[in-house]
Image 1 (cartoon, rainbow, N blue to C red):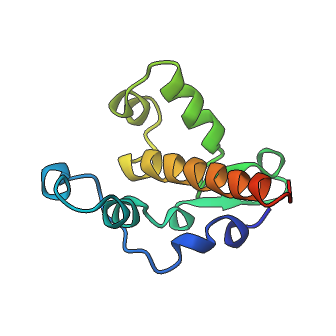
Image 2 (spheres, rainbow, N blue to C red):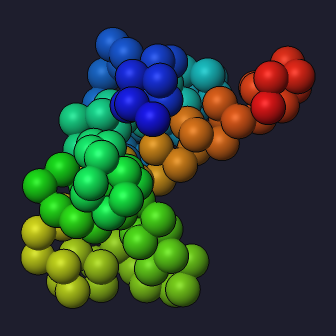
Length: 115
């Protein structure tokens, strides 16, 4: 699966770090969602032969699944970044954005009878 098949709805979205949640609190949900939805394709690649073609953080063999598992297991963003020096906080957010986009795409496919 190529990144362009997954991230089509994020093309052109401006990357916004989650630095100002208070400033975003009074904005309409759709606006906040599009601003927070970072361009994960800048950080995630799918390369055949690397981790069996699973989506990985660029320049690493760390998969999106790995990061999600660490978070689900209770690790904080800070702990993950400390344990894996090649990762940055934006990589964690990119993994979450990627997973959200994939879920949204799968839900859309199921609703339209395509999956």
